Length: 429
Figure: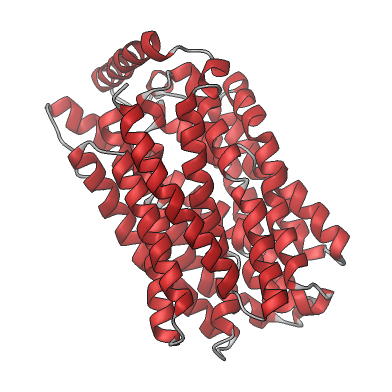
C-alpha cells in the first residue's frame, strides 16, 4: 500500500504487515466518522425547509458539534491513555453512532442544537486518538505518508458518502419517514456495528500483537522506544508541558485555519451545487468530484513530504493553495470553473493533514503525544464552530455564500504564510 524507504528485510516485512493489518480498517472507521459528521449538509436540502431553519440557524447547529468536541477532546484522550486506545476508540464509535442516529428524530431548533452538541461530545477524541494510536505503531520516517493515506479517508467518504446521501434523500415518504431521516438512520448504523470489531482487530502497540512474528515485534518495539528516548530528554514527557509549548499553539493556529477552510466548504457545498438546478441525486455525484481529486492529491503530497523530510512547508503550502483556489472560485461565475476550483481547494485543504500531523511526533514524547495532539485538535476545531455560522449568516444577509467563503479563504492565506515562516524557524530550535 505504501512505498517507503527500506533499509533491511525485517523492516520491509514488518512495516508491510503492520500497514495492511491496521490502515484499511482504521480508514473504514474514519470514512464512517466523516460521513456521519458532514451528512447534515445533505440533510439540509430537505431538513431546513421541513423544520423552518434559516441559513444562520443551520450553520450554528452544524457548528455546535465542535463546541463539545473541542471541550472534551483533551479529557477524552487522557482517558484513552488510562483505559487503552482500542477500548476507548470502540466506546467513542458506539456512542457517536447512537447520537448520529438520533439526528433523524429532531423536531425543532432546540432538539437540533441539543443533538449536535451530544454528537460532538460522543465523537470527541476519536481523530486525535487514532493519530496517537498510529504513533504506537509507525516510526517517524513512515508517518507522513501513513497519515496522508489514513486522512485520505475523508476524501473517500466524499466519493462514497455524497452519492449515497443523495440517493437516500430519494427514500422520502418510505415507512412514513422523510428522506433526510432515512439518511441519518442508515449512515449511523456502520459506527455501531464496527465498534466491537475495534476490540477484536486493534492492539495498543506491537507488544500486544500476537499476529506479528517475534523478530518483527522486537524490531518495531526497539525502533519506537529508541525514537521516544531521543525526544523525551529534549522536550519532556508530561502532558501539561506538551500543551503549554509554543509550538503546540502554533500547530493549533494552523489547524484552526485549515478547519475553517474545510468546514466552510463541506457544510455548504451541497447547497451551492443544488443551486445550479441539479436534483439531489445529481448533487450527490457532483459533490463527490472534489473528494476524488483530493484522494490522489493527499497521497501524493504526503509521499512528497516524506521524500524531502519536510513538514512545515508542505503543510503551509497545501493550506495556501487550498485558500487561493477557494477565493478564485468565489470570484468566478461559471459553474464548471467554480466546481473545478472548489475541487482543487478541497484536495489541498485535505492534503494539509498528512505533513501537518507528522509534526507533533517530532517534538512530543510518547507519553505527552496523546494530550498534545488532542490539544492541537481541540483548539483547532474551534474553527468548525465559527465558520458554519459565519457563512450561513452571510448567506441570509446577501443571498449568496461568496462573501463568507471569501473571508474564510483570505484568513487561511494569511495563517498559511505565518505558519510557514514561524514553523520553519521553530523547527530549527
